[in-house]
Image (cartoon, rainbow, N blue to C red; front, side, top):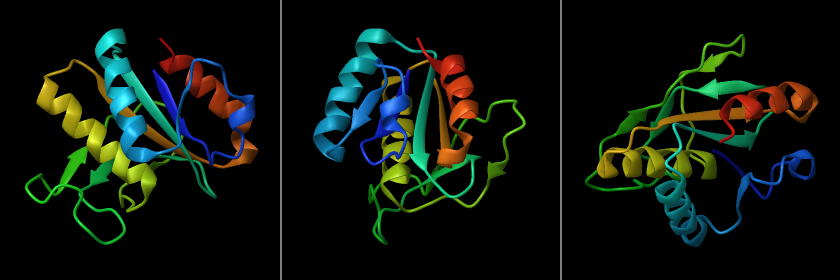
Amino acid sequence: MVYVFRTVSFIEDLESDVFIFGNLKSDFERFKERIRSVHPRYILGIGNAHVTQYESIALNQFHGKAIDKTGPSSYALSIPRTGIPISTKGTKSFCNWTMYKLAQFIEQEGLDAELFFLHTARSDKSRIRDEIRKFST
């Protein structure tokens, strides 16, 4: 299962079954329902960046504030075995909010799903299509 944000610069080139986040909170509720109905083994999020890299961590931070005041400080994300670099820093943006909330949801629901997140540059569009095919349900 793959999700992106409406701001992803190459969204028009993605396959039709990709979930698109516009409004974080309401779309997150819809995405949780989709996860519950599909039971994906893998979930891949994609966001814009200047360089292409997988994220290794979701931080309990969103624009300088805690996402969940009682939640853990971070969640480890799954990392695929590809030639794409891995970031160990984490972010504090919309991408991170969804990563953190999804990791928390997967844990709380006891789901057997791995969560991945790929920040990507538009110049890597064909490479990204290959990554999406690996994660599509």
